[in-house]
Amino acid sequence: MSLELSILMLAVCLGAVLQVGIGIGFSIVAGPPMMILLGTATAVPALLLLNTIVSVVATDWRVLAVEKQTITTGVAGCLAGVLLGLLVYPWLSEAFVLALTGFLLLIGVLITLLPIHTMVGTVGFAAVSGLSGLATVWAATPGPLMVFGLIARGFGAKDVAVLVQPIALVAYGTAFFLHGLSDWPSIPFGPQLWSFVGVAAVGSFLGRAVRSHLPQVFIKSAIRAISLVACYVLLHRAYMLA
Image (cartoon, rainbow, N blue to C red; front, side):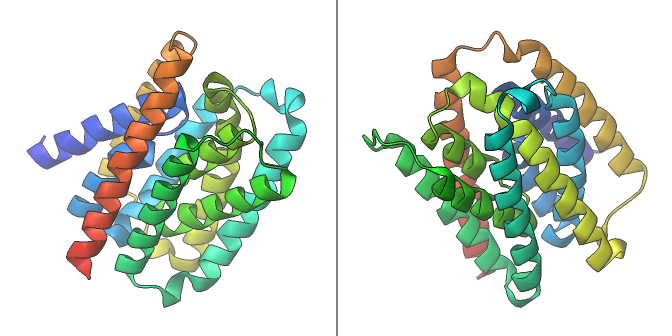
């Protein structure tokens, strides 16, 4: 196994653990090395497929009955964003896509630090979900935006880690399917991808095992820290491509 492949495997496993454990992290951790080593055009559909698999393992199906309205709103907003993102995707440069996604994440982090006591309503949450859908198609990094929307909706960090999974599942799955329809040859099916699928599944089950044991303060701090790292990576990559 080459050093590059070992790095990618480790990133996929760690990203899956974080995604399931705190609600975000897969694309943030696995995305940059995959984009750098495989190229963005190849990495994005691969990330969408792997994220779909991680979200399947991460989803607690009992939550669908408890928070049906919130999940339905999030899914509808995401799907609208995914469709809009696909329509405009061919007209955007790679640098613009990465930079815009990075700025959206930064705005989300800053919002969580402001002393805002009024929770966002259904329309506001749907709008954030739509932006998350856009980020799903463009850079396969919707997690932080959706998480920030759920936090602004009034949910605690532990609830967010569970609620975000079924929404992400629909967003990732739909984006992967539509991506495949528009450019199926770019999806890198092969031995390496199936190895990534296996590692992602193992990491997902590990994350599910530790999710209930993580303190709420840790989850919220980890979300902010990982999001800031993602902002830097995306903006730096965009700057290098500009």
